[in-house]
Image (cartoon, one colour):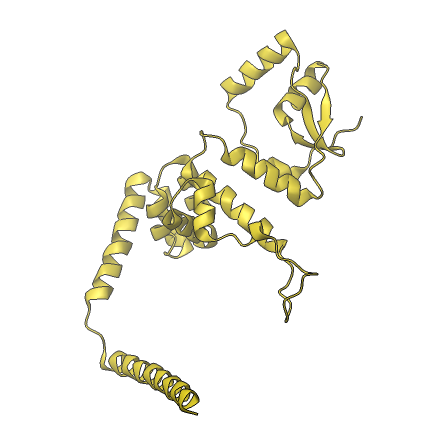
Length: 245
């Protein structure tokens, strides 16, 4: 039968190291392909490395359909869960996968109707919180927040440095607040330069927190406080009038 390799799905597959690939190839040549490849229709879902080696050497293999898949999103979620079950992933890899899962689930939630309706139920699993994401990835909620910042603001060079372990997630999230050219320069300087950049950002933030507030800032903050207190008093008065009526 025809088998299609979906390029999108390859993003969820970590490539084997040369040694791992060689060991798998030796095993398949000696023992054949004992485990069936998992398909969704003609799309290959599980067994990409075995499929490539078997195709190259003409090694027979079996396939099996997974009936639980209803859409390509189901396939993505299944592959993410398979990867999250592995112990060899770094915290950054886990966080990225968990955030991908959150995005897929969020996209599957139908618009909330103006009035509650049984005809448009919201999937419970789609209402995934940051804590739930962190738990699925087996990392802290704070680490998830840092990975979100890296994904949003980090230059590709900085992301590559996190993936390689040159810089920690915490430090990378700090460096990601710098302009892109400054991030790239820090990465080019190596591990010590990245650490220095993160230290400078933290020191700058600490100084900003300790500097005295300007008169304009104080006035603006007081006006905001007065406005909030006035609104709260108005709400309490309305509630009191309602109780006395």
